[in-house]
Image (cartoon, rainbow, N blue to C red):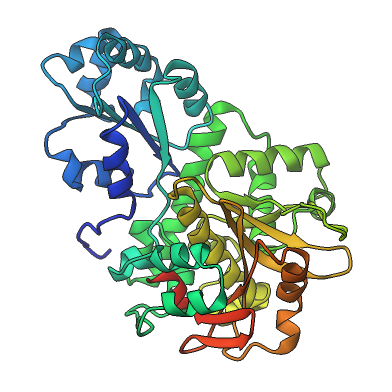
Length: 420
């Protein structure tokens, strides 16, 4: 196992800003995404009292007299609150006694009951922030989101060209390696492939036991594992519960319940259809992606690009990688942007669509370095349907440098789109 130092997170500034405006911030997400590390290492942690409910003494006090934990401290971080969710009532009382900004930073791993408790107890008092796994830019130590923000604001292709950086970044970690490792810090930052395999095995087992089996949320572990593997093999495809049920020989109701569990526990990302109807029949099924491509690759039985290619198109894995990054970008925008996809009944499709303030940025993801005219048909159809809202489209692909593909379509490398 490799020792590694803390990597600054994109969400640091966002969490700090929320602490400056709201009495409580709840930082949640999947297990092992770095929530505790962020709360201990970020600059905003320096003047905060840190309490972890993994500590048996702290946990006992939280169960017996939680208000005693806050005495003498203006700003408190409560880590792993899902272990004693009842203490949120004491947090509420403390906030109501004086609504000072930043009084509480609360973390909790994915737990099916935690967020219901938070929203019911701290309604109107807490801002909820999801911490994803490491982004490519965090691993590389580069920026992320500045170019996407400028492209969303651009009204013409000429403005988009002016927004491009002078050169495309050259990352230390190749794209293929980044996709295969994913973003869970322990697995992503370790160079030992055998260790990563063992870690993912343990993660799946621990996740099933702690987050689902303890709550009796699943009936059959083998069934559930098979569903995860099948979803990994169908990564980036339209969600079809009927097909999944047939493949697993279980009921559609079971499949839908298991998918819901995977989604609310931060394993699956459901990207909805952009279903505005303007003369074209639009397919309304969502696309299904994994929030961590490393875990998905493991579930699909792949540890190399060639093995991934046997599970499906390499382009689908790249699309998943881009979708995860775009979802994080969208969640950090003010006002919040949205991510969707677009597909018509006559076969026209756009992989991903970013929307903010009425502006649409249609995006195609292609593995090739040289997109063909046929690769642009979906973008052109979308632009013809939404000419005012989508003045130009974007192809994120394997090209080395940005290139104009038509008067309305710009191509940029993966590195330019996700590392600037």
